[in-house]
Amino acid sequence: MKIELELFGTLRGLAPGDRLHLEVAGGRVGDLRAALAAHAAAHWPGLAPGLLDKCAFATHSEILRDAAALPEDGRMAVLPPVSGG
Amino acid sequence: MKIELELFGTLRGLAPGDRLHLEVAGGRVGDLRAALAAHAAAHWPGLAPGLLDKCAFATHSEILRDAAALPEDGRMAVLPPVSGG
Amino acid sequence: MSGDFLHVADIAHERLDPDAAQAFVADPGFGGAALFLGRVRDLNHGRDVVGVSYDIHRPLALVRFAQIAEEVERDVGGRLKLYIAHAHGRLAVGDIAVVIAAGTPHREEAFRACRQAIEAVKHSAPIWKQEHYADGDSAWSEGCSLCGDDHP
Amino acid sequence: MSGDFLHVADIAHERLDPDAAQAFVADPGFGGAALFLGRVRDLNHGRDVVGVSYDIHRPLALVRFAQIAEEVERDVGGRLKLYIAHAHGRLAVGDIAVVIAAGTPHREEAFRACRQAIEAVKHSAPIWKQEHYADGDSAWSEGCSLCGDDHP
Image 1 (tube, each protein chain N blue to C red):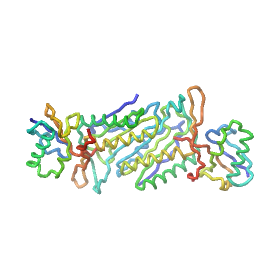
Image 2: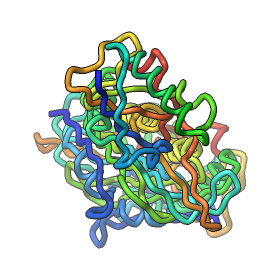
Image 3: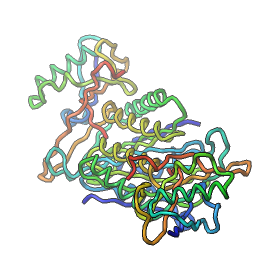
Image 4: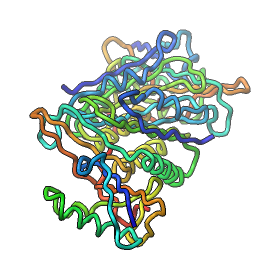
């Protein structure tokens, strides 16, 4: 399914408008993680190694684990490790 | 020696101007404590039992223990248990 | 009578307000309020910092703030007013990045609530800090992963 | 660059000012400030309180505040700005009785310093609280004796 993935923190600037459009093979968050990893391997050579493993995925209201189903509206965000305060 | 003893907290109002003038037999703070106890026994029947044992004595700059010498200027304060904040 | 104020402040248009925080958590039945103010420091890990930009996933941050308030209320176990506000945008050294305030009947719970809330905001809210250095360089801070099983 | 602000405020002429406290403890090198505000509660030990009068041995209180600041600085062990102010006189419910603020490079020390200072003020400063009740009665609060060997 098609996912529009919003980028935050250190991932900002890696796609126009900080939004990445990915075609995901499968309907789980884990499938989105794999699609993002493939995209990163192809397009983001400067990305810190291991960073994506530490990223979470979320809708506008909750973080979803890898086993969760992707939302019907296809809108997700990728959350690098946080550093507020 | 003559001591002018300033009264605070629950002892306020027990002497005119919140100052008690005591003749102390001896030059130690413990002698002042004994003089105050005698005064209280004679004049302050409503005083909570045991309160004076919990009072400390101080100059304007420090608390003095019973073994300490009374200050030459004869000015002391009696400090009931504190309850600030 | 308990209550929360949860806010992400776009600092292009407003500043964080410690006065508003302490007023919000005041209550005739409360004897104590604890506040925490986080400010931008001029030095971090040995580098001269001239400013910080905060990126925030705003809707998710507000959801998380509400969860934090629930967690703090549950753990404190009594009456509580809690205020959480975080800046969004670019701040200079000395500017306030985060304000937490907790009002409770007694001071012990106020300190606990305030501390728990700031730790939770720092470790689990979708907020990212980019430091700007005197030499013109910038870097996103290393942070806490939200992948752990302890985050819902 | 560390410093203390130690004050007894005659509330007939001035109010305690949390804003001044947080401004005093701010510093370009400090990432955190913890504040405590003590307010007059409307209820204590089940009695309706309408106000509180604070009696203070002012010169000795300022000496003790300075000692507390020294103790806190020693225990925190790093850079610190500390603000201690206590009201003297009659307050109404909701009025601020005490303000403590501590600024430090990191938040852990700010919380510790603030907590240590308020505990020390409450337990060892020559200050006495008289509560005024709705029924017209008044009572001096039970307190902490200063006779102990741990007080110099």
